[in-house]
Image (spheres, rainbow, N blue to C red):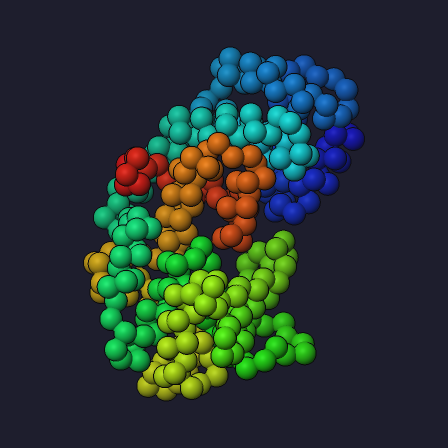
Length: 308
């Protein structure tokens, strides 16, 4: 069928399982609205589709999945209906009993939830006298003062100039700027190589604390075991970051939770809610993940950014 081939093409960057789910959902909706032609023109008739889905005797979870599929596919096809399907997706996401069941997990993590302002206040109160304190503050700066990446700061090589060829992740440290080059990470196939620049005008506080850290760190890697100068690996960073938060605010905050908190606050801002799909995608791109993953990260919060 031609319409399935077209769907497979626009969904080529998705996993096989995700691709199959979306194609199955769109095919089901096509049958639901009784559209016979072998194309995707029916997706432009958002009013008819919404009428059928909302009035059909379907589980809330099924309706939500229908609107997720419609939102993703219409966005990839750049259809005028994409914003409408996105809003319906969010409407049913909040209604969905299954998601509210999933959010019972939040009862367990509620005591560890923190707003961005609380995290910044913690950062500002952190001491920076000893090498250990400075390194910990530099780590927290990278996760709190900018959109938090994944566990991407482990085993980062420190260089004084750009290499001719380099496929690993590395940081170029110079007098007036620091450049973090990310080549190997989870979604590199989609986003490609990324460069983050720090100087007196761009993330000046990150630039300041990193420069201070490099006054003490004379090794070859960004973060190290102070006793051996060995680079901290992914396991080290996974354990260290929550321990720093526990030390200062008695909350076990993981990298994953930092990313969930960031996405949740961003998605509850008026600019995001009223923005276009393109504007929303820019928010998710900062965390180097898809809009679909971003919606999975979103938690239910009240107007004070507290978990509910």
